[in-house]
Image 1 (spheres, helix red, strand yellow):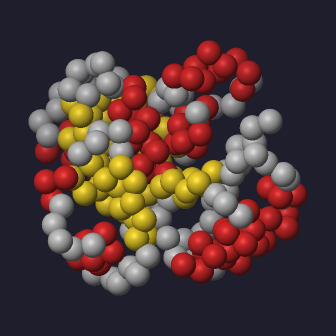
Image 2 (tube, one colour; image 1 turned 90 degrees about the vertical axis):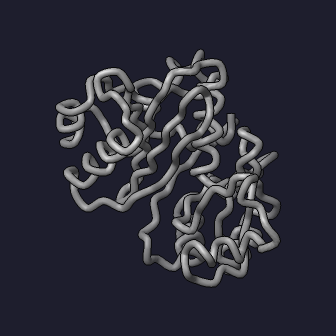
Length: 237
């Protein structure tokens, strides 16, 4: 059995206590599983190309970028091997995860999402813009010639803010809004209020595809809008 579970937690919440509360409410999370993997998103997340490698540590690199000390820095090498994802996870949260689940494979949601994009574009040289929404953030990615050219995230307050950030990416990279598709995933549906506004400016709107290993099983998921869970599924497929 494969159990996939997604939980949103308020940005200012006490994460260890939120995890304890979640486990008390969802008994399935404490079942005996052969393997437990955790996909987590934290705002202290960045990409470090090999060209930027230096003598400073990953923690020092995070502190330089975000202006705050991060004593615990995690990293993982992406499928595009010259890029490493670096991020911070609070020590007290890691301790609670260990106490609750034992041995856990941990990945950052942004890193898993980027690896999914690399797999989809490994043999396709066409440019594509990806927007993954998990309010109040949107992660924007540009893939050209199968390679990552841009990835960043922004906090947005309104649908107009969201459209602005997306159009700014198209403008800064001189992308043709009639030709280059915008591929959407996460917390957005075709009946979302922002969808017609995006369609007003971008000719081709698409929803993200599932990972290759799961595409043949799409019928098994019934009426679920699977683009909402692309990052979760890409990490464990």
